[in-house]
Image 1 (cartoon, rainbow over the protein chains, first blue to last red):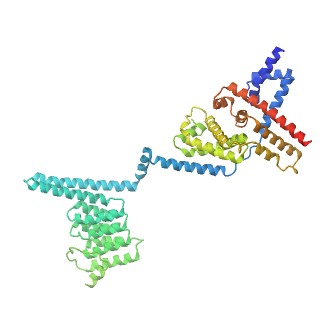
Image 2 (image 1 turned 90 degrees about the vertical axis):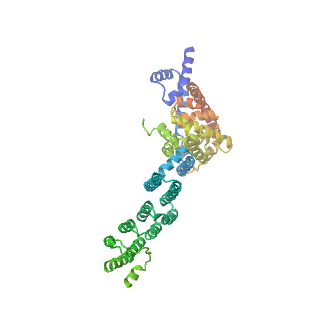
Image 3 (image 1 turned 135 degrees about the vertical axis):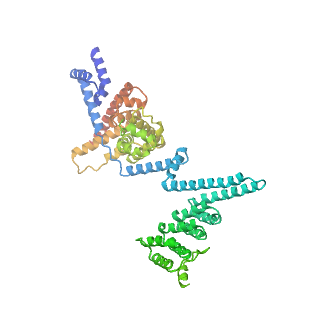
Length: 303
Length: 190
């Protein structure tokens, strides 16, 4: 009797494992042996098993179709929130810096830095020259003046590399005042004429450069710029300048430009006129300050 | 380590790849839904609670260490969500509604066997609803969520032996309640 009750207690203790199928084989065998002798335990286990099975078969309705989209929209909100939060953290700033470091920006920045370096080196050499020739009280004034020029120059060069088109337009205006005396500013203006993404800035640069055509560097730069232009407005304006300058060296680049397939019809006419003018007219000495008027080709022909 | 295990996915979420939670959602929204549904019997509320668990997993992702099993951690949060909901909304969340609703299912034209099954299901639902929350929980976790007793012990912060004893008692009580309800409905039928 004593032994049986101990066995029944053991069965109670093992019941849950037996139902879950996690009872080790040896204990299983002992339990089943006991069940063969004990109808009470047999009945209890059968009832428990029936209930356990019924529980397992209890149906669960499918979650509605909204559950999944609701989760994913919550996830998206959470992600957006996280990104906003991160944008204030150090990691966020690093990430933004990485994003800023796009090739276009990097190129512009490198260009700006290169010009700045040229400006600094140029400025430094200008400054050191009066020092070496060094003559008394004049020395001070002589060193101060180039120093101020250099600073202004640096500002202009930096502004020419500004991401804002308005800033660059302003810079082109300032550069016009500086360029008479400085080859670096001239180089920067020519570079702006060839590379600036904004048409207005390129036209402004051309306007300033066409006032500096006494400088052979400027003339050459303008001729070389011809085939590099893709905007009809700049192409036409450049052709005008060539005619005004009676720049015969421009004939070849003009012909080159004419061969481009996607050339604007009006520009084509303008280029042909310009070529004709350049071929017919004898070469007069280059005019000192030509203007960029569009009527010029006709004027020169009638003249 | 397999990068698609639950633990590895959750660690990736923790490291900032929040979108990896999508895969865990696909794996566990049904079991979680069943967990809540068997606990409160309310389909709409269960969906809210599932959503809530996933939100808390995102919000408290830093508390996942990867040492324990992901499922245990998830059910830990699920239990808290359930307890909070019960505190907030005691009368609205209970099994009784669904059991009654299941009982009222139109059965006139269906076969007797199906009717009987529907009634059995309804009775079992009602019996489950009348269990104490502690007893119900241990049955839901072991039977419906198929957690091992070791995992449940970890989850409930107790011993494996204590979990088995509790489950055993819960099953016994469920049987008693079920038989009582069955007798009651038979009396009504007569």
